[in-house]
Structures are given as structure tokens and as C-alpha cells.
Length: 121
Ligand SMILES: [Cu+2]
Image 1 (cartoon, rainbow, N blue to C red):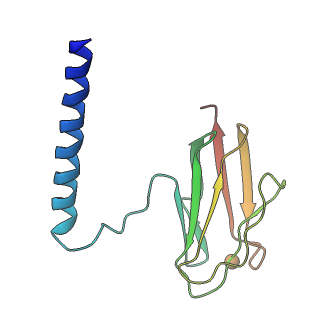
Image 2 (image 1 turned 120 degrees about the vertical axis):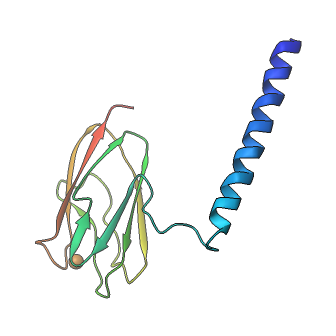
């Protein structure tokens, strides 16, 4: 038991140090880096990017609109509920369901298409 307790304390210390270093790193320019999260799709210049995103079942996927135009996210095969019209900087999040290929498009600009490949978790 004492070994387990010790290991637990150790991992807490590591986590605290990590958070501290992360805070310091973010603090250097005063804001978080603008990079997309692992499951984030940016809508920019009438394109979804990445156009093909691979995720695991149960993971969240978020779109964010960086255009000055409204866009939507609509599943071709109705695999998820469509988004409302996203204004600039609006976000839309779904949770990936059953494994498979989800194609989607923007109902305002149907030439805008993207694909999500959902793998078994
Ligand atoms: Cu659009």
C-alpha cells in the first residue's frame, strides 16, 4: 500500500510541475498559441481544413468559422445533427458516433465539403 501511495503522490507532483511549466510557456507571449486542437476543423476561405480528419469513436470534433461569411456543417447521410449557421468565430461541436466515414458539406455553399473518418476507439 505504501508503494502505491508514494507513486500517487509522485504523479501529483509531476502534474503540478507540468501545469506550472505549461503556464510559463503560455505566459511568454501572453496568450495561448493559435494552433488548432487535435480534433478541430477550421473553416477559412470557403474550405474546411483539414478536409479529412480521422478521430476515434466517442471523441469530440469542433468546427470554428474563421470566415466573414456564415457557414453550416451538414452531414450528407444525416450521421449527426446539422449545425445552425455559424457566424464569424462561432463553433460547432459533435461527438463522433459509430465507426465509419462521415461526409459533410456547407448548405450555404454546397461545394464546400469535408470528411471525418471515425475509427473504433
Ligand atoms: Cu459555407
